[in-house]
Length: 231
Image (cartoon, rainbow, N blue to C red):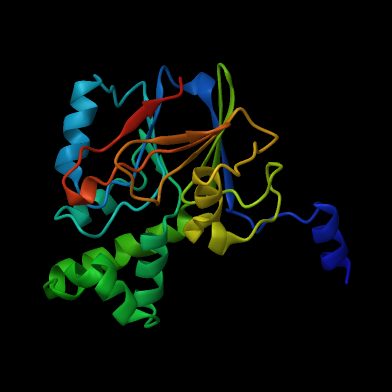
């Protein structure tokens, strides 16, 4: 009962690890990258193009590091690098479920077949890397020079943002409801931050509505990986 009342009042906090804060003062420049989908070579080329400095800059990923491309292991190894942070994408969620024996066929049919083709040695390595996904937050708040930027994979399912606020985590990783509403002319601003940055939905060009932008430009079908700079 108490939990329900707190949730109704917007006071119930999300489970530990759901949110993460980034202090922009610790970095010279901060970038956000769209869905990588195991295309490390494309990512690396874009980092070269912008002169990314791994000692001074930070790259924030909107999730979906894996599946469809050929560099799955290399992209999983990005987790824990000092110059890289990511939120969980729906493909990371599918991988976690599959290694626990749940929804295996669903992941296979959505880009996860590479995992089942690994040899024994690589399979053990990838199992360890996939479990590192559990350390990834669902929501990153980056406090940079021009304000607060919030990064989620698919959506922030509330019209008012607050760090630690409990939200539907399935919608954070999977929902396209906000995007479809915005594309139909029914979008609305999310209060509580300057900008909200999402991936998940495969687009030809980034789509902006109000203080929200969707930046996945479908690298998995041949397009370039999209990177935007927020500091």
